[in-house]
Amino acid sequence: MKIYELARELEVKSKVLVDLMNENNDDKKYVATSVLTEDQVDFLNLEVEDIKEEEEKKNNVKTDADYRPDEMIPCHSIFPGVVHFNGIHSGMTYKFVGSGDRRNVEYQDLKAGMLEGYPSLFNPDIIIEDDNLLNDEHWSDIKDVYANMFDANDIQKLMNLSVSDFKTAFTQVPTIVQKIIIEKYATQIENGTFNDLSKAKIIDEVCGTRFDLKY
Image (cartoon, rainbow, N blue to C red; front, top):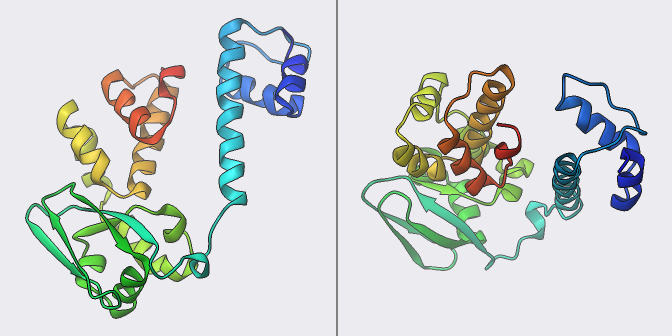
């Protein structure tokens, strides 16, 4: 199958597929009439699927004002002990038991905690998992806290953990930190210095990436 034929099937411009092939191959220059192998067709199908999913997410972005007061927002604890998060508006107390424990917290309680400067949010004991919410400008202070939680040395230490410890730690850090780690591993794969397929599989499982196609 030629690139332009696959592009027609996938309802994308041929240039999208040509660019994807050239970005991931150094040994050959691809054009719209280039013939693809079955593996390359599978690769492009997955890449286009990811692109369309990202576009759909962008089209469905919620703003801070779109959240209902009682809408549940997924959060998890990074504190090894017990954390009680008191909901100002709902009157509920959300109890997190141990690092990694997950609970849903009402939006109105998180918003109130953010406005009140709750230490459990700004010197975080709990991490908000809703990236859509964190990307809203009203929540930029929380997002900045997450971005500055780990310096380069901390991230390198995390990357050097054993596979089992890495899996535990990677699932608990904020998404913004996960993205930094993904970028570092992607760079290592590109320059041929990456040698830990087990960690790549963990990242694929947690984040839906496809390092298995690049390694």
